[in-house]
Length: 464
Image (tube, rainbow, N blue to C red):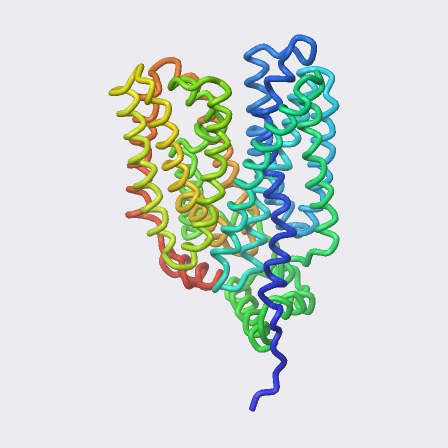
């Protein structure tokens, strides 16, 4: 009879390590949502006196920074480790947030928002990759889905904090500084969390630190035998690749690697062209454009934040039950339907006092499908399809594209709204959803039930 010790706390240790890392995702969500509440106050003549153009630059600077940060941090993470890079990002989060809080003019605010974007982009690469690497195959889907839940929770927290501070301190001309100062707290917590977090075992193996990797695997696996088996699987794959040399960008010239990179970039674009950030960033404008008062639109926007959190919780549950392709198919069909209905209702009911209520209901349906199916499946696939030795670098390239399309959607949406109207704008998003569905059904592979190493073998064998 076996006398091997069973680690009953393995799953709890794995989740705890994941929660420490997702403090970066909390900052990701909060920093992308907080500007909605601070912008009206900082725009006043007695504060930063922002013109509409400067407002747009303050809002979008974080997207440009995030695109650059995702590429840079991905490479740094492969060189120096996931934990180390997140530690440095926590310092950048703190300094950039402090700079935003103390900004004396628009130029300083835009610059600090840009550097804040670098930290946001870096965390958007490293956190999902780290979660995928510390998780066992059984729980990988839910662990990576945890990131999406924390991101939308951060956005909802930003909406709520914005409302509370604005209501209680709205008379203070510096209220926007108090709103932005809240972001300093999770930045400090992320730094402290990284002091006790463990490094990714897969990254440790690529650097020859096998004993350290085994120590981490023993913490996250129920038995030592399972930890050793996982370690052997990682080492076997690296031996198959003959990866004694460091990764270089020449590796992307291999046909199977080009194929994976194409799929990753297509997934990143798919997540953005549904139009999700048109609702997350401009939800209040959509509702006021439909007929709500400003106050009612702000309340409705909190509702969008709540359904995003509920949807991501649903996604955490179903990601372990159904395949990635099925999740994306269901989500894209739901988002397509919501886009079509928003466009149709806006045309048929134009001028009706009931229109804003229908639009609010449809944006809630949209976000329900997006956050429960599309977003978690996208982040999961991006985090698991790339080879270990180049995972963060490849994710950096992929998420660079994600942020560029995020920026384009954020930039173009209000322009489309003014030129072609709300109906045609959402019809355009519906057409893009059809393109995404075709890609998912014809090109995207299924990776459920496969270990990270088996996924790599699958790609290498199929796309030689």
